[in-house]
Image (tube, rainbow, N blue to C red):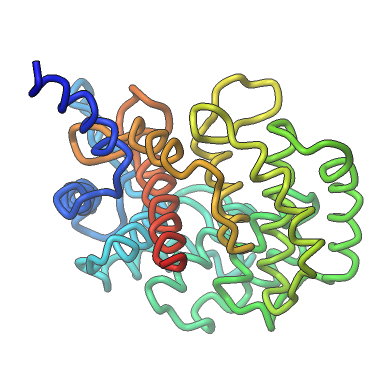
Length: 304
């Protein structure tokens, strides 16, 4: 009985711990196994029930590069992957697209981030900022566009920040009004990350920092994550948005243990992560979970 009693109390500490070196290596192997021999990464392992050959994607390639970096691993065949990223660039429009597809704001932002990860010079995709300036029309467009601008270099930001910050302020008027809670966290995180990315040198006053961080901190749900309005369960994409804002604010979530357990629930035996617990591993799931874990590790280190 004494042995069983000890196991009951040891299991939670294992489940909530930081990823082990062995687990990180498993994830690295999962990612590198998804390389296309001609360049680029696949978003998912090949389905054994279909004869369709897997195709590399710009999204997966960008995510793979960052995951490997965050896990302390080198990107193998880097030149081939860089060449694949450039194949996704359309010099006529200045946008990025998936192979055979049409450019859009999201993929252009992802393409810029991928190009930055592979060290591709700006002149190779020189019109990307012009594309974002001309085509980012909504807050969500500019929110994801801000990620590309951050990777390119904020000093060359194509957006008129005053006008966009006015739009963001209007968008966020209800986000920070009233008692903060779970329903506001996604919107507040999206708005804050947008602002902090495009104006990284601006410092919030202590009182303002507490006010804008409140809906993020109190919005954490019992399962450890954050979720969309109207949804009872948390989801990893919303959790990623909120955690990015907390990372930029240098604010630690209230319940790190439950958040790590939430991330761990997305982990599969193959070393990858799913976007929803119980689903198959995907590059998107691996990216979200790896990055959030990395931010938590950095926050833990900063507190020591």
